[in-house]
Structure formats: C-alpha cells, structure tokens
Image (tube, rainbow, N blue to C red; front, side, top):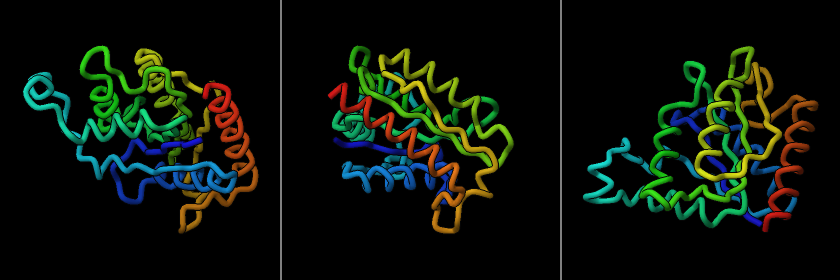
Length: 183
C-alpha cells in the first residue's frame, strides 16, 4: 500500500504541506509506504496546448507517474478566492493531458484543507471534488477541513489538538480501508 501526498500550495511553510506531512506520518506508523511530493520542486509550467503538442513537459510526466504508482492520493489545499489555488488546478489540468490519458482516472483521492480563517478552506474542497470527478477519480466521501490551523499546529507541524488528531486518524483509517478494497 502506498499513499502519495502533496499540498496545493508552493509556499515553503504552507500549513497544508504541514497537514499532509503530519497525516503521512500517521500512515507510516500504520506500516503504509508514503511519499510526499512538493509541487514547487516539479516546476510544472502553465498549461499551454502548444507546449503540449511540441514538447510535453518532463515535470508533468514525473507527476503523472507518481500518481499512477500510488494506491491513494492525499491532498491538502488552501482556499484562494473561494476555490482551489491556480498552481494546483494547473497541475491537475496537465495530469489529464494528452486527452484520454488522465493520470487520476480510477485513483482514490483523500481531500483535506487547512486555513487560518474560520471556514478552514472548505470551499476549495467543493472545487477540487468536481475536478477530480470529471477526471474519473474516486473521491473519498469524508474530508478534513481545519479552520484556525495556526492554533492547532506546533512549530514542527504536528497537530496538537487531541480531537483533531483523532479526526485525522479516523479520516486516514477510512481512506486506507477504501484503498485496500480497491487494490
């Protein structure tokens, strides 16, 4: 069993990167193989149909291969202007190219979001769910939305609120159970 995790943010100290890393650490404690992918390291170009036809980006091929080799994908995304961030949407758009070769097709996706605000980025989840379903992915029905994330993370990125830790563990347990059934 392997889970690939990444955040919808490029920021080095992104709350969502911390949430993904924390959740992957919980998965590792259960004997699950995990991989954290930083979209910043891939440097995926803006989607351009001309670029797709002339020279398909190697960074996109790497991204698509990592998706394909995972049994489940865990994504935590911030919410920008009531939707998912452009950098994440761009990566998702590239992952579905060329037409008929969508990397997320049939993949199990677990969605999380974290924000300093009081809604926790929940509107990004609606946007992402629609995109993944259009690409043929299977979106795990339960999600995690963390409002006021500043108050629940320590300096190392660990979730320190015991109730939230239990909620993340329950979410992860369900995601892993679903992934095993699909495997």
